[in-house]
Length: 304
Image 1: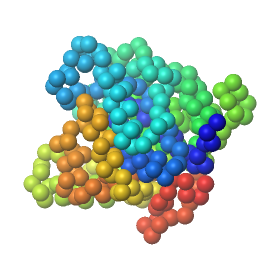
Image 2: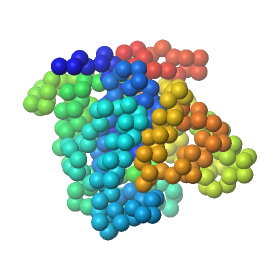
Image 3: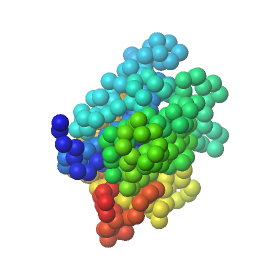
Image 4: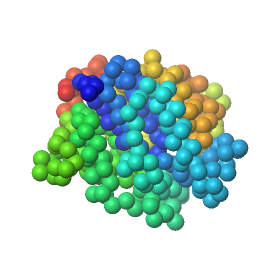
């Protein structure tokens, strides 16, 4: 039996591509350093927007094969990041993408019609138990999940947050579902975040370059969306600039969802790759370990 890495990170995401956008550089860095990286994806993203015209037939209202295609995209992305342990919650197809619509206030909400098997409708304990078993198998010291709003309100992101937090709690209870493995208490839980100061800096650079369409409507000096976090609430930053090319390659692998002329790459082109090579986190459980000069941890395993 292969010995497990001494340090182990578990990430829980809603759809393929979320992981590469949010923590792709961190995942690539830790994988390259020999730390354990396990990704759990909760749905196959069957209702994602298809940005490749010749693949539009995969849409849910046509062939309904987008999930299978995105499964392949995710596998390609994980190869780019060097991550070998990636799983779908309960197995591929257990939960379906719930879809979403935009609220007039600019954040996502549940769609008017939700599939019976949608992740949004999943029984919380049932879904959490599936993750409890993974937690007790992998025994991670660190868990990364979404914040309670799921970044921007997507119902699957919110549900993934609920499942991750509940599963982490249940997994630590000695007497709970012994059949799912030996109890394991995750030492530190983080919520992925976007730095307010970095976002404002990026927007200023975009506007100064004459780009008024990327992140249209966002004022560098005005209110920002819910997915942007005040720097005062940040606990850690992983500087993985040496791995940002791996992150971009992983994002490109999700070709049905991300285009090279989209907002992520436009932002990078204007202020440099460091905007995506530095990934920020809020601490939801555990104590902040030793920090750098900016008051932030530089390693998610700091103090563990």
